Length: 204
Image: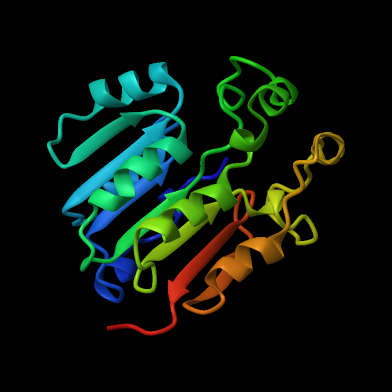
């Protein structure tokens, strides 16, 4: 679990004209507390953990923010069709391992219990693409080491790769790249557990 607090989001708002921010994985609201400092018109945050959503709602009193308590796949399926189609969106995708990052259950328990929802990234991207033209949207993907463990990240290693293979939950970088190959460029950042920055090839 990384944090976009280490990145300046200004260029994504100015260069790509992103006025809406959507994050999956509210967590301790660290990323939301960073994003709210930038001039987004609207912010949405999603988490399956009701306690985390409730804490975030208590922390922020801002009409720009919408809090959604649901699986990221379900939330995106309902939310994305309602987003303005003519305004680029910045998506921060960081929904992994329900309950584990905050020690309610172990990572192994989370993976076994939630299966695909423990690794929802590919499904999230496909849901977003199903409901909007993403060619002008920006994507920041956290925990990239879960998809490509060959690079020298600040926080390397992933001890549950064998469990993924046992359960058939294989995560491959090429699957993610393929979803964006016609519309976006990408860059890997090795900070924390790795980030994939996906930006439009053609800027309006």
